[in-house]
Image 1 (cartoon, rainbow, N blue to C red):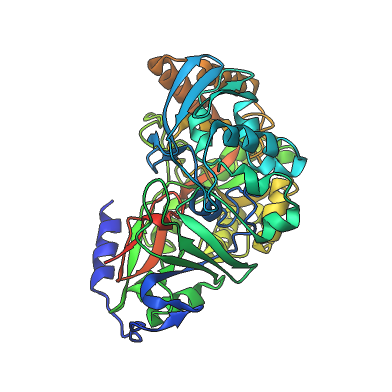
Image 2: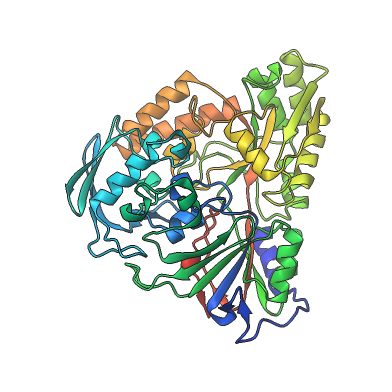
Length: 508
């Protein structure tokens, strides 16, 4: 978008005076600063136990850095080989994979098919390991070992998402994890990933060291330090001072402060769809009426927020499915408060009603400014809202438990896989916190997941989007801008889906 380009061009010439960068020979956490990249992160990795790995906070650092996966998924959805060098679909229920020979873990264990079977058996052994989603998402039946480097994934029903979920499924060494206590897995590690675990102080920092014998070669930067710096202003200040090399997720309004003599803004149009998800079953009774949900979509002036709060770094989306799989016939709900009032009156609420908006206190940038404006827009059509902020950890726990009601400020599906993007709106899905349930949508999804005809899949996908767009389980908003700050000494083509692939960074 042209405004977005203009803003970026302005940022590149907006230089400020900053402290001198760290000089060669300085140390950080006892490591040579010249060999170490320090990343300022919003939240903690939470755990180094790979069986508890999920996308909360920065746990992908764990399962894509200390550990490794069978396949790689690019931000555009492209799947390529990683520890598995090839695969084929044998039949509707069976996928066969061949591992690369010669892969070893940090402690010297060879990767074989037994590691894959052990990993998936482990994640099915305890209810708390359900956050490792592969088995339930693909309806895993079993892993069949063909030989040391060949195994088969057998599902209970046809699944088109096996490769997608394998990207989020770290494979672990048996020797360290078999019989290991929870305490041991929380304080030590072994993995097949590009970095070795060195030290972890919860809610403070984690140190990783490059693994020289990684199957893909040692990563370019010898040491990584992930520091927990929740306050955005602190991340910016440390970036400007040269004490960190990466400031995660900075707000568009203060992004220019990252443009200094030693650092720059790294901004990309994001993929994550922001929304106020509507708690249809547990929220206010009015939310069960489609007309009320549509009215709220007409009530929000999305263009005003994206232009004046988000500085045109983003725009309203026209589908919850990212291009190129989005239905081109859909358009954003226009700002039309009069139509919103008419729909509310038609639904039996001419005088409106009261709701609660629940956002995390700080997660996506400008959370308070945005949610206050959303509340004001809804109030203009008679829907009075009480905005109740929750600390991020509490928010995530309560959201996972589906305890949050009425309207929830959250981002979803930073990916380009229409099966997964539609999946989160199916009845009872773990991520469907709107609790929307539609039998026609579920039936279409079953067909989408089973078909092997690309043209039929596209037709079904478009029909599902149209149905959901009209039913409004969310107040559809905009995509989250992906804005970070990076030290000029770092070369790194960051992803626009929120994954932190620091093993791809290098020094200039």
